[in-house]
Length: 290
Image (cartoon, rainbow, N blue to C red; front, side, top):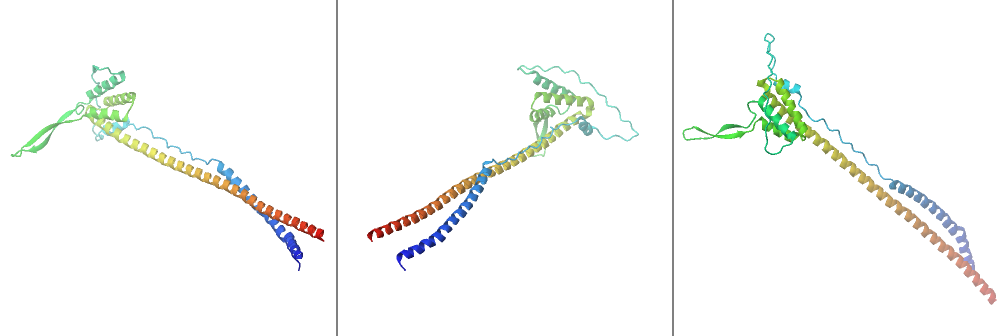
């Protein structure tokens, strides 16, 4: 078999098999890569949309605690006597008019009214109102006799002032509390006024402690849920950013692959055409030689 016939057979195989397969492969490859680009574009559009953020709603605060008149009356009222005895009606005595305390330093009118109301409550509560002194044993001598020392013991006025300063900020609130206590002093018997005041101070502290625990619980729960929502939002945002990067890389890779495959096929086509031109030139050369 001559060399020209061998090239002729190879050329036919190339025309019928190689180039047809290459063209079919190229279009199949382009179709697959095109679908990949379309999918990557949809993923890119999805990643561009910002993620939703959960709205964290704080639980409503409970109402500020209050000690009611009914609670105080129930606490200071003794159990009713047997039915055969009539309970004497307590006589309500009006407190004597107290002079307004004069202060050398300038005091605003609201603070002056608070001090006046505190002095007025002191006229109702005789014992345990101001600072008192109590004796306590510090040791014993050789004969077994105890030795005493005296120490200050704060009274109800100090407890009430600490209560107002710790749990009530505005002076209007303090004035309303003191006026409420004076009204209670008018409604309870003289022997039960100290007990009523002690009950009010103790119960108010307990209610405010429970109230502040509820507030702390609400704030803690709100902060935890807010931090969780922020973390989920940041995670979703990061995931979408990663999706956006992957989509852009997929689109770029697909375009590069199409270009490379097309370039290879172009080189093959150029090589085929170059070989055909070369064969034609060789034939013309041989004909000229003959």
